[in-house]
Length: 275
Ligand SMILES: [Zn+2]
Image (cartoon, rainbow, N blue to C red; front, top):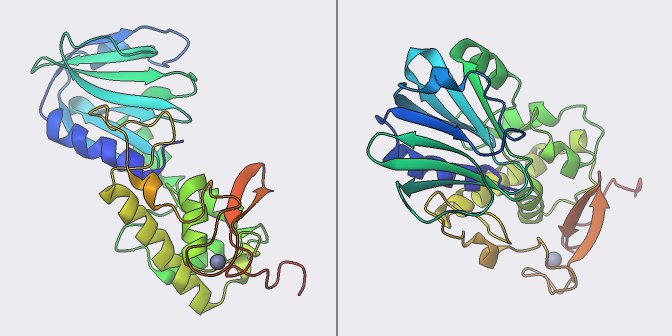
């Protein structure tokens, strides 16, 4: 699933290509996919800004409309010149002035496109946790987000109400960098552990953006390119391989229904079994 670095990579390209352009048509190729009952309201609107919050992408339009896009499991948001060869699993496209199209393709159909009024959109954003790359996201903020949470650290990191944008891949990578076992009770971190986790989260997200995201199968940038961060992963989907940091071997467990990868030797089980 695209996480913060993948969505940010798409957002950056959209900022270069669609800001200032006007929507000339909204074409829904799969009516079960998009919740755009008033799509006609979008036609003639200009893209004022491209936003990203957590894993949500938004095209902010003039006249206070917002088009919110979420790639979910397998969505691809592609910017194509008009007349470009067909893309597979096309569900929806927006035609823009400047002879470009924004195409939303999705083999799994879990992606979402919503149109919202700006006020409702701002309300929605309040339901998300802090942006982990914002200057205001400090170790103290992280400790506050996790305070009194008894759930496993892995589950807390995936909770978008606690921290926005971290998903399965970057949660495992950040925990490895912080030397924290994924089953550590989230609310039990010491200041030092939270400091390591804070650095780990920001480092993996920044590195992920620098590599234009992680591609295992579906994810593509808005230019249709694969990401490259998969070559830098330290634990995710490395089950049975040697740890990059110690003589340990990467293990896989399931936490909250999600595949979780860690090194049992350098991410020890302190506090997990009462030990
Ligand atoms: Zn290790």
